[in-house]
Image (tube, rainbow, N blue to C red; front, side, top):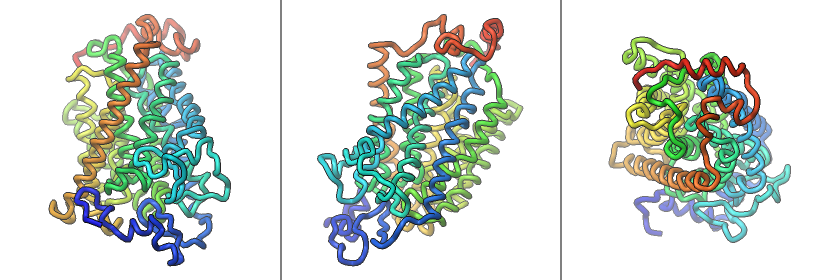
Length: 481
């Protein structure tokens, strides 16, 4: 086998010989897991790991319901609160059904290194081995998490899929029709999320084979959702009054509580990825501590920058800084040490603050900063992984900080490669889907419905009287952007 400069895992002959079953007589299972670890055929389910991953899955679901729902609903105007939580709740339900039918199989089949069917060994999509979850029982295990029941692994990955789609809603808040939103989210999950997840996390995915590192979702979750949010903001258009009216959040306390739920749930998001990738509890602990450090540093740095620029630190700014720190550390949390975690939060908070302000200067209404926080943060985290991946944590991860450009530059190049691929796929396909829906059934509510609020106009219910909603809409502060 000739050495491959651009795809470092392909240089490892032992890795590929094991995948091809050439070492099947050595007493090990020939199924190679995500990071090249082979498990003994006699290994059974590890109850501790299974329980831990089940808890982490529940925490990630808690991030969506109620965490993200509260986080977003506190930042919209009072006449759109119910519509905002409705979006999150309905997306969780819709993606769960699609995961049962297609999503899990498209993302994570085949479940072992051999594969079955026409799409086996496909670097972009999973095969049909688990459509309608066929073949999955309480006894089956996935090669990507060979020490826990496959049902737990499937549930855990489902929670990632639902929150990723729900994150997009922050960009087009206050102005998209409900029905077209559901159609878009369903198609987006199958055509955008599933291939990116397969490419970066499955051992047959082309980004995984290239050597790109993404511990818990910088590409599949944050870059994909943030870039899609930006595209949706452009296609749907700005809110009425954007740039002239100051769209004040109706209840910052709800956003604060939602952020706290996201922060706690993020421990399951990042730490659970250690077990779902056939790592061990040592990297789960590293992921937890790195997450805490980055989130805290990101919150402090956003607050300090805002304090310097606007002369006052705000609660809303600090909670957004914490989310920025959480996003930035997500792809790196298992691969970096605590120095790396601190630096990621230190640079991530200010850069995401800048990302959130860009909309005022380019005239794109990313309403709740899904692009400014998630896309920018995911890109920062992916690049920072190339700099701070510590071989003490993960041997093949040679960051530039430890090895210089000569040896570490290849990892950095692979991180940039994965980021560019994720941006192009998520942005291009999202634009096609959104334009197609807009040209057929339309994406945007009418001006009258937008002014009245989506709660009453789309769902026929509201938490305030019509008089209070009209007063809220008519009395937004008129300021320069």
